[in-house]
Length: 257
Image (cartoon, rainbow, N blue to C red; front, side, top):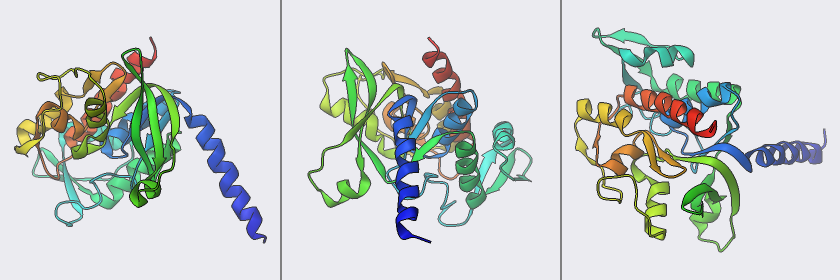
C-alpha cells in the first residue's frame, strides 16, 4: 500500500467528475429534497446534472426531522416519489406517511447519485454567469475558502439552466437580484421574503411557485417561499418532493428546446 496511490485515486476521480460538471445541462444549487428529486429524475433520462452543496452533508433540512425527533411526515399524494426513490415509510392517520429522516435523506442522496447525479459538497455558489439577459452558469468556490474569508478566485460551471434550491436563504436568487439591475418574475420584481408557518397553504404554494424566476434560473422547494412570499411549513415534506418532480418536468422541456 502506497499513500501516493491513494492520493492519486482521489485526485484523478475528482478531476474527472469536475470536468463533467463544467458543462452541465442543469446546475442545482442546494442538495435538499426537491433538488435531489429533480436531479435524480433528470439524470435517469440522460441529462448531465450537477448539484452543489455548500455544507459537508447533502440532504438539506431532512436530517433533523422535527426538533431533532427523527421522523418527518409526508402526504400520501407524494407516495409515488418515495416508491420511485426506494424510501421506506409507514402509513399514519390515513392521509399521511411517517418517514425516518435518516433513511429519507440517505435514500434520496444514494438514489440520485446512483442515477448519475454529480454532487459536490463543500462547494458554494458565490455568483452567476449572466449573458445577454439570461443566467448561463454559476461561479463556485470552496466553502472552506469562503468561511475563512480568503481572497481566492473562483471557478465557473456553464449550464443550460440553474436552479436555486438553497431553501430559506434563497442564495442564488438573492445574489442575482442584489448584484444586477434585473426584474424577477415575481409580483414586486424582487424576492418577497418568507412568511410565518401555515402548513396547508405553504405545501400548495411551494409546488405552484416552482417555476422560472428569471431567464435560465428556476426556483424550487423552500426557495420558492422566500422568493414569492410564501409561508413556511415545518417538517412535512410532500410539497418538497412534488416541487422536485414538477421542476424535473419544467427543466426537461427547457433543456430540450
